[in-house]
Length: 255
Ligand SMILES: Nc1ncnc2c1ncn2[C@@H]1O[C@H](COP(=O)(O)OP(=O)(O)OP(=O)(O)O)[C@@H](O)[C@H]1O
Image (cartoon, rainbow, N blue to C red):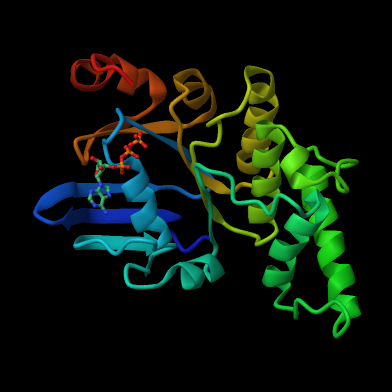
């Protein structure tokens, strides 16, 4: 759907996911505007990761719809959603440790450019992928680190590589699943800046699950609070944090 069509970047309607008689998500509905950053918070087991799995296509919902730029993608597999502009990072690192930083990002760039993975067959496509990978690494502040092996990086820098890989696929909507997980406190600021840049400089729509409340509240436009598989509240960080239901149901529980 073309920009300016009036559809939200991403919307879910009456979403449900049940398995073995257990209801994991129930009646979840919200819309995220183009270029908006939405934080998704909630106690452990609230359903945040399941929601992201449903959004990205890893899991099929048992009720409701997922709309990307107004298009119903509920039944589309992960790679079709990715082609429509949906990007995702995971809680755990998805890098090839023995490859260099540049090689990791180049793989993502090659997938985007649709070229063969054979550098011998398509040397020019390889050059284009290398250029794209270098640009994305520059964007996340890793210029000069291209030749480091991924496994030797700090957690924070690994996360930046993963974001660069995701950016190489030119997504319009990105799902960041706990980007700060395992990241040392010294790296949190730099990583927050990278995420802020996605949003501010690129105009990318961002949904972010994150347990670090100070990070979430400092970055996002709105926050969605999940609790027992339901959407408890959604609004500005100030409004949501002041909400008595949220305080009782969420802030009162250990996270
Ligand atoms: N495929 C499944 N089969 C059975 N139970 C599941 C399945 N997927 C999720 N659950 C359960 O659903 C609940 C929600 O899990 P989910 O991982 O989505 O929560 P979360 O909010 O991401 O938690 P955390 O903050 O700990 O990552 C949990 O109780 C989990 O055990």
